Image (cartoon, rainbow, N blue to C red):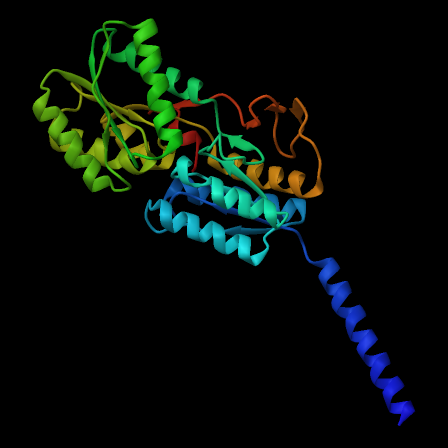
Length: 328
């Protein structure tokens, strides 16, 4: 009998050792929760995240809402916290409501941070920024003025009204116009949620109500097709210029048709890679330096310790002439 008990204990100890070893070999998990799944922009971030996970030795989880619903997004984040994912990044839809999940993550020792869209007052660990909000707002206004002049009337069609990144870009557009181009008239922003159809309707209404309008800015990637299609449908190519924050693949046909004059963005695949890299740094307890060497990046990635922002780099301008050099 004693012999059997000893054998059972030995088997149990062996099983526990195997289980512990298996657990120790588990890769750290980094998640990214986009504002919306199924669009080229966030698909590119997912691809970059997958590449980083493979190269950095982590598991990457990509999960987001099917429409731009802040409540659904927060529920997904909470589910990831409940699962014990080591680091969770969020492209924030509603900056005013994310603080409680940040605290819930901290209580479980989980690193919760933002990427692509920030919630600066939430207590997040770091913000992985695609470019500065000021740089993005200034660039699109400066590029438009080159094409339509300093006294033009310009419409703005954004996405979700609560999206902190979109609102920040609009704020800097307005500041740049007021400071540098006082005769420029920016119309009040209109919000289309997450649908191109609604963006097209709003753009059509803007052109009908303002026959002297010279340009329309699509602030969200989801609104780019709607704005461009409205300009094409109205027969306004050449008299109204579309511009926005759209991926080259989304904007390519509109750049070539002339409905869009240019688009301002960055490489979201690189942003996805940087997001996972930042998550791994946080999990490992490694501090960000003022300049960070990230695998596959030509230039150092800067970190602003006072604001807690890790910066991908300056924005890029895509036109009909250079768009075919890019695939995202």
